[in-house]
Length: 158
Image 1 (cartoon, rainbow, N blue to C red):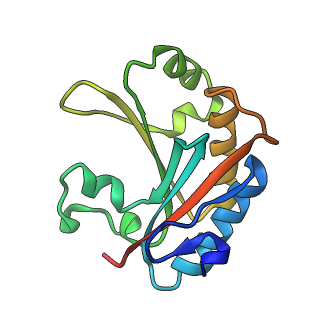
Image 2: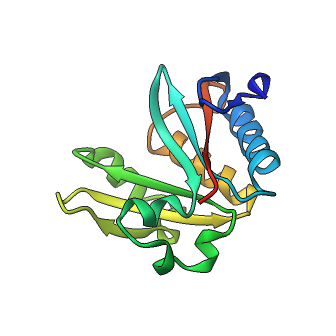
Image 3: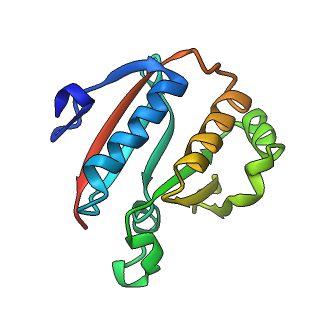
């Protein structure tokens, strides 16, 4: 599986153009993790700096301290989510708030006051791709043909 950018240790990185690598990573994640409902994390990085992460929807509420029993069934089933944090990034936050997709995100604030936004895409591959590309291009200023690093981590069954 390492040739597909996936391995048990999460050490395999694939470098591809943004639009191609994103689509390939989404498809590989469905192929390898959907059937057994493994939680996952996809790092989308530019020059070794993570720009966005796509994760199994269960990871967001668990990272906020919720018990597995307090998590909605829809978030426990295989799905894709995105969590964005804006820590001292006012320019990027303003750009994000001006996107058409902004209204689809849920807002919450960490204890230290950092603004966070999350969205659960379910299994909608098209929406995952469209929103991710919209944010990467229009908030962070990258282009579809820019080269990015994609790394998929298997977080196991919950």
